[in-house]
Length: 630
Image 1 (cartoon, rainbow, N blue to C red):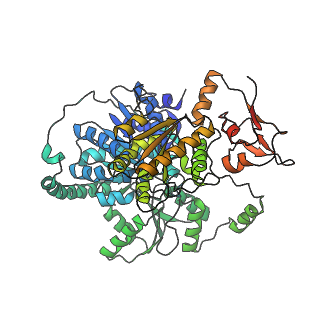
Image 2: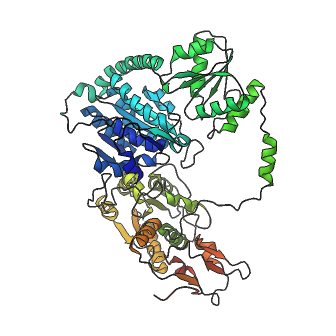
């Protein structure tokens, strides 16, 4: 039984070990959600990965992988306005993309429950910044809840829909990486029925926020947030744990670390755990602060709750010492750990622990140093071949704007074809800016999923303004970095339906790109290099944008298909007699399936890692890399 099949079980009381992301997917069933739209992004990926396989088996349910987060929020928001429960999911930076409709939705509100799940990524394990999405709730005047573990991820999701419908506002459900990817027992509840279709009731003077409407809706929103504040005071999502002179305010995964720290330090404290963090329960916090001369605020990233605690203490003239980031006990960067919280509480209270951190650190230092393992493009990745050709054709002298995806790993030697990156889709637009202020060749790269997510406006801009840029679209037929989700170019929807895929080359032609060419990165390398050189030359001569689409499946998809069919091409090997140890295959191509034999320093192919792409055969100047006879 797959995890998606298990999540579909209609067995009340069944206890299952789930990731928080899987618990949220199960919560969609129990909350009676009618529509879910999302753009995949780690650490939220498993929500969509499960829902896409669950969706075809759920009556009256629709799920989609939207083109981007803005689209997803608008699709889900419209469904909630129409009168059915909906959900939108994204990672922290994805909410930046959806910010425009986010603020409008707060003004218009919704008719049925709507939850926006946003997964922040402290320590930036897979993100370009440490977004703290709590400030979106503050700035947008939107209620927000935060689970601390997988069980709460489901139960708080159900509560969020109730809050949403009481207020007729969307509710933010904020998670963090450590919550999303933690496993814990979760009890199944009753699966709620969903309506088939609803009749859309027109109400333009609420849902069309022209200035005259928006002026009326803003005061209404502020009144709704006053109601939300009353809910925050009464909800069981905010609760007290333990007793003691010391007070601790915390939320999310930090609550777990606090409990562990108190046990380790054998410390008594009263803990105020906030599950609804916007609006904060001001009376509850004020009463809590009054009971304690010293209160510590434990939260990852920005001092959100800490600032609120100080504000409330000042307004209510409460004599309390609020300790946290401002005094340096906690950092504003990276995710926390039990040790970080234990050490901070130890400094504040003077309570020592039996744990000998010095001895532990010493033992760690005494361990043999592990060889560095930087993230690499997979063996057989078509992007490696394309980047090798780009760098060879331009001799490394062009400017290389990059984008968000696996291919950003080309920043590392020896490929070194990533010079600037802001966000998804920025490769094209930054290329435009650079091309206008330099005489250097500019060769940008963007992935297929990112192309559809946010590349199209940049291409339209490049065509209209005739920016002299070369663009290579790295089409590996999937959204590879976040788990092989479909996109408009794959021909598969979130409901697992097969549809005609959108053609990237044709889309570029339709936008007016004069030079468009599709290539096979696994064809002869000399031809691929010549194709790149031809494109760059055309741009230089015509002072207009050109596009090359490099099309080949992700190496992991190819490997999976070979395992399914049992059909494998002949293996590759290095003829040691022809190899002169020039190391070009490692120093220029750097395929992780190749290494040097220690005694001879000649190249060797590790068969268990090789994905049989054959790129190395064209790279070797001696012709020493060969394919076995079929």
